[in-house]
Image 1 (tube, rainbow, N blue to C red):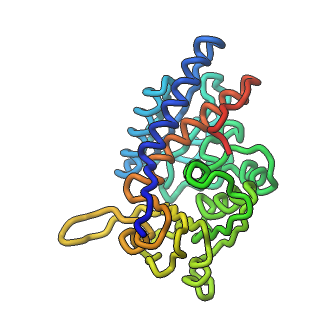
Image 2 (image 1 turned 180 degrees about the vertical axis):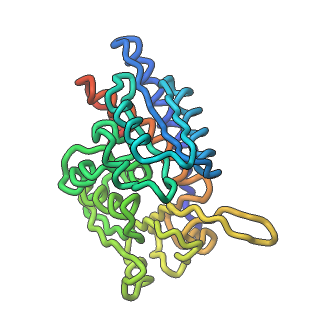
Image 3 (image 1 turned 90 degrees about the vertical axis):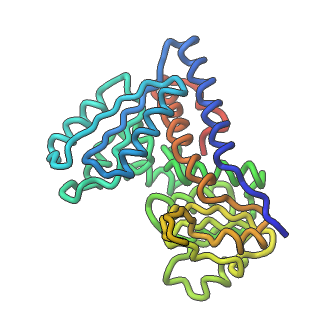
Length: 296
């Protein structure tokens, strides 16, 4: 068996095209342009790349992009004042503060200062609670992207046995909540799980989000399972720096029914879902129907 490759890059391009079409319609019929504000504190190289990509894709789908780059020594009060301004700005429908923040800043305090209705990352404690209790929330982008890929591949997730490896607040926990909302039977596994390979082997759906390069090998995967690899790890191989996931792709692909590659799998979906969330936030703010097929 050779697994079907789940092409996240192509799927993300389709999501962006759908967002762009809806944004054009919103402008023409309502005179409204969705706006996304991204705040970057400091000069972390990876964060700078992400912010540039987010700004570029925001403009490409017809939205307004508001970038705020602050020096690494910015104090908390200054950052909170900026967030308060963005909360009050009617042109801004989504606010994202790029993580990680410099260590002298309290990330929880900063994230929870964002208006929950504009929290397009889905990290505000109010959105976390709404998602956990099955209510309408802004959903974190990476889990939302994983959910879209799973629905596209499998159709209904009802009754399917899913294992999420990893319990982070950014991916693992919200991923499990989304799968539960789609009536899957969900196990959250982690480093303390006993007989972890055996637990994973029983799953029809495996979502790996542990941040450990190629930890999940083919002998962990049940025949025909759908494998979503969230990991993005840089390792040295044959004298070169390469990107690998949390799943050992070659061995898993020999057993799985479908698998996301790294790169080109979940990664492109994250920014596409950020744009979808911004459109959703704009629609909600203006009392308009939510974009069909772009929400959880």
